[in-house]
Image (cartoon, rainbow, N blue to C red; front, side, top):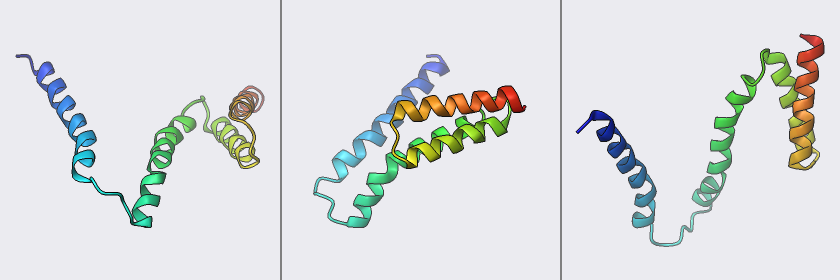
Length: 101
């Protein structure tokens, strides 16, 4: 058996265990408000941790990436739609890259 197949099998087993163990070990309802709030924010924190480095390396210069990110933050805090935030942020990064760098 090739080592590649062994690695794939090991990866599948680890992934399965990570997903299966919480279902089998935690059968009761979670009553702790701290644990509930922690589990509520885990997906958002994970998404942010994966997205933020990609934002900074999305353009040739970090200044245009930061400008687009700043515009996205401003629009998101003003409760604009996702399409508006994404479009204007990309346009901002494009304009900064085109004219200022």
